[in-house]
Image (cartoon, rainbow, N blue to C red):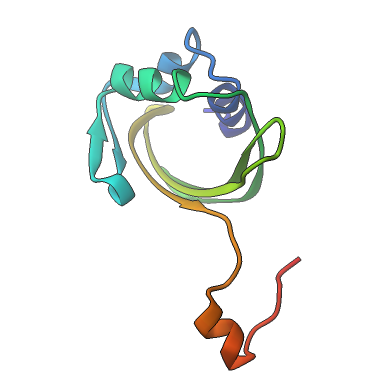
Length: 122
């Protein structure tokens, strides 16, 4: 499976090609919101999410049938920013299982700023 093509189709909300990356009985989980989807439910959730999107892959790690992708996603107007870590298990070159953890990007909380620890990554 070409993970870069998959990422591009996720960002462009390509309803026609997204199902082709998955096994028919694949399971997609979003633990942060306690949701589990079938392939077509995932495609619907992804493709009907408001706005137009862009993003970048920040890191990919592969270990046998498992791919871990860390990426940044943002609307085209860059009014917000999110990070996602996806754990993807492949079977015969198709996604059998995908668990994604999504987070809003933002500043460190005040209690940590008051401690005067850490520094910005970028």
